[in-house]
Length: 444
Image (tube, rainbow, N blue to C red; front, top):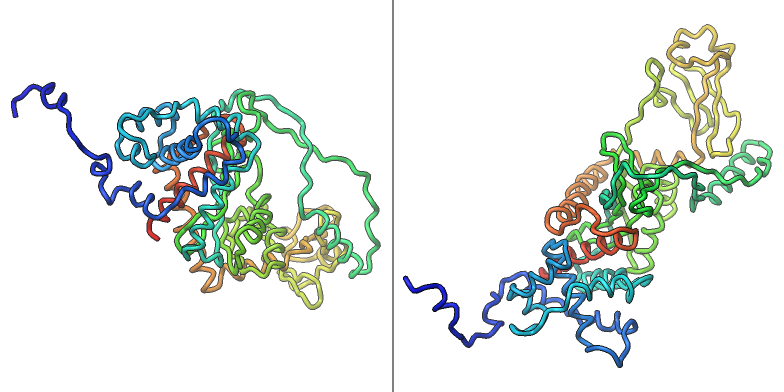
């Protein structure tokens, strides 16, 4: 026991690498239940048959999986870890003396060979399909939310630019609904407006121009990306990941990403639970059209101090009018180009109203209450949230999607962007989610 260190460590031993990795090691369990040979078929088209060894691409991707499973943020550090970690070598199929691929090989493949491809999305989808085949995904109840992924950019280094506002996908449907509503109320169609592109001023990072500046109440201002994620209720398998700049509202990509899951995985979604950021008329209308039971958190409104909040005015659906707190009627007047019906009070009746000071501060003493043409769908979602099943479902949302984000940050290093650009941020989010699903698949 008192021999110098050199004597014992210079001895040769005959040992198998397989003996050194315990059967209950995480990588052993993953290897037991997941066959990564599907990767070869996915990436074969990006390699020439005449160049390189056919196993090299597979090793590179599995190296990336090891890095994301264990939260190793640096490819250079990943190479060092694989050189000395027996379990990593065993998982890659490398012998003790086999050389480990250089870290720059991973970088080169990402920047050049797989540039402008959908290979990472395809790999993520294959892992989800594997979970579906093993009955680990029901596809009936889904939870969606987003979290910020801090960009590798200084928030004080930016320029201000005037950019065009993107036309929303629901714009044509809204215009059609407005015209139908005006026709129903005996109003003339709106005159066609000269097409003038709406613009807005935004901050553009000089370091990473593709990220977006996020400025939200009670949150730190920063340049970031948003990781929009969907999980299934059954075993919390992540079924969709989509990354946008940080200045894109949560609700913008939601319906299109939901439809993608219908088409790609054949989900028959019956219910969804969402955060308050998704409580918009278009999303509520979209869920209603798809016959999905939507549960969305309540959004706090801040009415003008001293005036009645909108809920004090009762809507009479049969007569299509509002009743004020003094039991007087506010009748329909018009439907605006933005999709809101306007209901106005009678100024003669309002003049002597005891609640006038609490109702309106307009000079003509007319109270105006607006109602969106799709408001009934939002009211339906509100009732869903207050129902017994809605309360249970929303409780699950916090336990499922919030836990998924927490695991990605704490266990897989998804706290900030390692590289610049939307493509690289998407790669990081997709591979992190894929590895989270891989860890779940060991429980097959």
